[in-house]
Length: 367
Image 1 (spheres, one colour):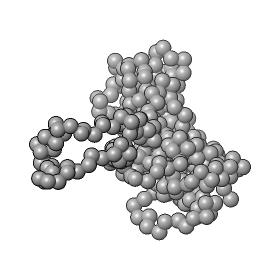
Image 2: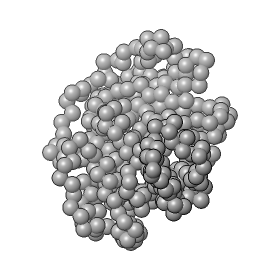
Image 3: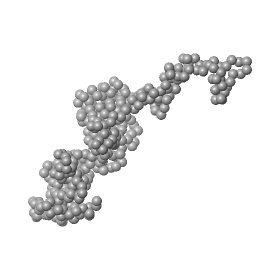
Image 4: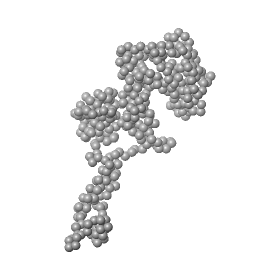
């Protein structure tokens, strides 16, 4: 539904006059989302001047650290509104910024969706505006109409912060695609609607009703169990019918005056059967033995690293992990994120190295 088609604000929730002391006048918000705000709302637009210290602080919030980004079950990456509020409070000071309603609350007809326009003011000056949206559920104690109105305000806040360059990487689809591939997993969950595909971080605990998928190591073990063993290998044929089958298959027959080639011994047959079974199991995969660090151990590492705040600065965390494992960082890192390099580094650990890493994180982080 386009903004122009949104219904006008019903009379019972029409916006009241807003007393803005800094402007010294009474300002009335727009009567609908499709209406332009009164000119007084835009006082000071484009005139916000930042000190050098404020510019440096604001630069710290341009990108959200990878370990702080979360993901919704539908695959949408996000960061909580508290992160944006923390950024505004630290850069401009508590009480020096405010979200001012730019319209009344609008409920979309025939749905539970709520819309409201909000204006971000910093130091009494116009900084940005956005329409926030949220949804309320009639039978829920955790998401009633009041919660939805608050949610629409928070949604508008995160959108307004785009104009200040806050959390830019959350709007970069290519970056988020790479982040999701490295950091998250898609799982199957039993819900009231049936089995659905949901997303979650790989270091988060499973959902209620999540169907556990076998790991790659478990799948290889299952394939190995299905492969024929040496004792199940067919016995060699010694009869004349075996010779006839060889001829049909184009195998060389015994020359006149010469004995036919001796049939393979039982040990030879067993060895050939074992080789065939090994080949079947490893087909399409590396011949190297399975790595010690499984998906579950990798999730354990990231959970410990996040708790120890080791990944607050991904680049620094990568160096600290490399020092702990006494390894040099790879030189060819073009097109790879710090998280991708870290995953490869941890996956290459043997048992002693991984246990040393986990003990260090349990003691308060790698030094």
